[in-house]
Image (cartoon, rainbow, N blue to C red; front, top):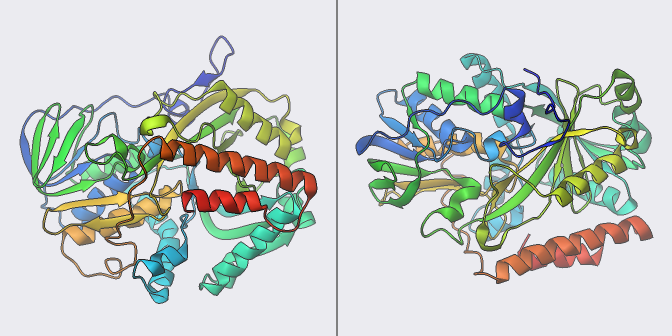
Length: 470
């Protein structure tokens, strides 16, 4: 389906995301929890993590009674609002896993398995008849300054040192980078092969339907008030279960006892009107690549099947007290900032209307490293902290949760992110000051690198990294 601009010509702000608008709006809500019930596995949150966990549980043990409990509707959170990047990567510091007791071989195995998730998601989508708008392509990260190019070169070299196959990555010069997408001032780019572009709402809705076909119950419009061993309390009744999986990602701080577990970092996006064919001729982008840049306040973008550009980045990075947005609404200043980034990278879009803006939250652990685990004594499991790279990571997390619940010793259950417990975030106002201070420093570093054209990363950015433990 094609999203249409509002009759009054104004931009739509919120309404969850453009991806749902493209499908005709949010889906009809499933029935809430009918009252007290008992199941084998209760999953809190019906986004990618919870749905993948249910899918693999029921694939391996069809007789299980599985229920997903969702406050809004399946895909309401980051799963239905993200930038549509399915890369097989996630943001992390490899050394943190080593310091936490992992081995170099274990970290390399984790990376190898995560890369395979792109193929796995494509396999499941085909097997289940899910039209997730999946297109196999490359991810191209552009450098528009010498310092940015140096960071891409270092990223490539580090990845190769950690065993990433040489045919996975390619560092290209400005001429070749411009032949792909005509980014203004491009000095080069890092190309990653083997990734995919998706339409998030279509993928998550299709996955929810596949999970239901396998026998799971999805209870929407049901707010969880407490998770405790053996039970999930909600405003609609209590669910009793031997195993309970917390799959709430950026919304985790809203649960009792988890205010400092993960930090809900905000990310915002805008969708343009469809570009005229002549403008696409000027821009290129014929390969539908995922596109980003190497600035500190980075952006991420895709070209949609209906000829739009969707671009995202940080707006207000964090709301005091771990507050979240209202139905995806974002600030006018954020929309203006994203539009300025788009016009800086692609000046051809200067007069192009913006038809939709929205935002969402992503979960950030204190050490910026994702985790998945299960406490065998309490029966409570969890997964998340994807730091914005969750489309593919959530697939592997859900698969791992299924293994842990079923008590299976697999190639996944011994990886260094399993049962990892990072320390808590600081109380307010310290975390608000730290996060806002971090992004002010990143913005200043970007300005300095653009103006002075150094060949190394600004010291301000290094200070920002230390400030929040990145």
